[in-house]
Image (tube, rainbow, N blue to C red; front, top):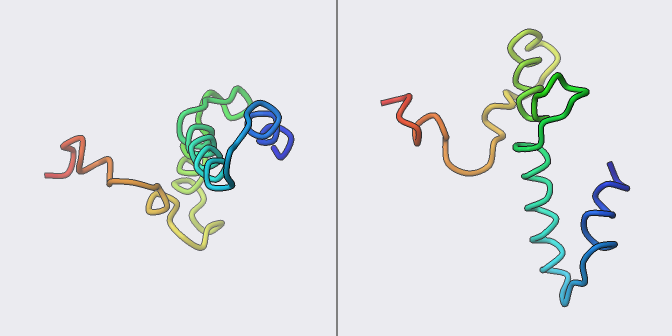
Length: 82
């Protein structure tokens, strides 16, 4: 994963500041964890896979991963919890 991150950031782009790199890195990790579907995980994103494992084996986790999702609560935004 470290090589993937490096190739997607500092090897591909020039950053004028450390803050630009930090923003790009944050966006890359969000896209990777919440949007990129991986064949090795059965077509799920890493976040979806963790949530799937959490529902079947919750004893393996200290925290509920559903509450670790950044941003707005998507269930409320989509109208599922009104």
